[in-house]
Amino acid sequence: MQTIFDLQNVSHSYLDKFEALKNINLTMTAGEQITIIGANGSGKSTLLLILDALIYATSGEVYAFGNPVTEERFNALEDNEFARYFRTKVGFVFQNPDVQLFSSTVFDEIAFGPLQLGLPREEVIKRTEEVITMLALSNLRDRAPHTLSGGERKKVCIASILSINPDVLLLDEPTGGLDPRTQLWLTELLQDLAKAGKTIITATHDMNIVEQISTRSIVFGEDHTIRADSSSTEVMNDHELLLSANLIHEHMHWHGELLHEHLHPSEGEHHHEQ
Amino acid sequence: MIPDWMNQTEAGSYHGAASEAKKKGFAKKTVDGVLGFFQESLISEAFAKRKGLLQSLDPRVKLISMFVLVVGVTFMTSPWVLLVIYLLTLVLAYFSKIEVLWFVKRVWVFIPIFAGVIVIPILFNVFLAGDVLVPIATLGNGSHLGPIALPSSIYITRQGTTYVVTFILRVAACVSLAILLFLTTQRDLLFKSMRTLYVPKVYVLTISMCYRYIFLLLDTIADLFTARRSRQIVSLPLREEQRWVGGRVGYMLVKSLDMSDKVHEAMISRGFNGDVKLMHDNVMHHRDYVAIVTVLACCVILALISRSIISI
Image (cartoon, rainbow over all chains, first blue to last red; front, side, top):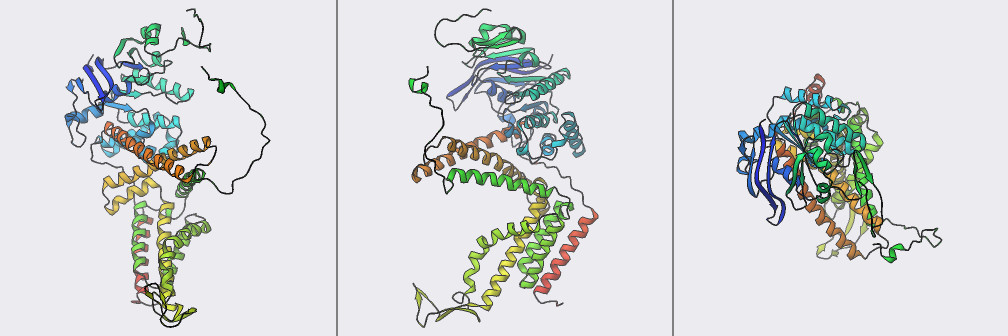
């Protein structure tokens, strides 16, 4: 399988002070479905931003499609063949839909990506219409983003990326704030895209979806390092690992497939039977 | 651990005095203002979607026509011709399925604020000499208002009145045309049609993004003020209120800068490299050509009549 991302000893810190990633070594190959899981502030979103070449490693090396990813190669104001190739191949669904929905209408939003990539006008319209049909967004076609509900915004965000037809999808907390029906819709969509051969990399701390949308899980610790990198099933069954990474609490955990949660006094002895 | 004071609860009926505020607090006024803006924008969008005369025209034709008419109106000096143009805007509003009374009110809200205050002094002979129309006061010779020498009698002049009426009608016609354009055109199409006036693409994109994010930032402001109201028990001194508002202004600035960085990242992620590409999907129909020729002809004829170059 072709290697898509290769990270070697990558670290990143904001303002040279706040460490977000520490010594990350990773390889991601085409067609994988990967979840990056970790507690709040563990570095998941930073890793996605690095994978999408929106921020850069402060130390270490990042390779995408066999090419080094450096700030110089992705200078936003200059047209660069590799940068263009990269943007065609990698799509990023941001956590906050308001960041991503900057156009006046849903149609313009979905057409934005293909237009920027220089596709012919007819092709842009065709793709936009087909994505609108695929995601059942016809009734929202001419609506302004501020008039959409949270679930609708998320759908339009995903549509705006799918119209580029990227091989690699990066998703940052995609189920955050979604109602159960939209969460299910999203899970099924990601499964369908996986079957179509897309590489899907999702940052989340929603443990309910990990095994449904990924076969491999990378667990980030609160010290911004990788604590584990193995199959999603193994990770989800490793109670100690999930506890130490602050992904579950001792009193909120799974028994097989069942989420188990209960109140308890915060003092005194307390036992759990596994 | 819950502290002791938090364990004390006293939920029950309140039997004390309750006063009703006569004036709204500044937080409530701000929230109402934001909600009013949202409501106005929804009403405007609803008008733009009606199947009326102006809505059926190509937005580029409307923009150019309105632009030509506004320029033409500034060259017209006859109040009668300006009155005709103003009445014409009412007719256009009627055929564009806009409630005429509502439209008139909306236009005349602006007139006293922006035009009336500026030109009212011109009515009097203190600023513009002319024939007596309405005498106001007799001051006698040598009257002064501070360093300004006043005439012996103050009156409203015929020339001043004509000037004021002409000016107000001109403003009313221009404001009506601008509001008509705004009410009968979907925002995205209106912004894109600015390209026909050779407005650079980057400005068109910036304007449409500004319009989109105004809603988001106003929503945040409304939330801030609502959250404050929910925790406000007593009114604070004015200085404290001002300090809080100042702090929120700073917060909004930081938040909008942070948002602009993230939006830029989202644009780059989808292939934006500084060269703006926009979709243009407008097609000109026969009625659009008829409309623009009619507007141009009317504008030229009315301007010539107004300047007494031709007479009817």
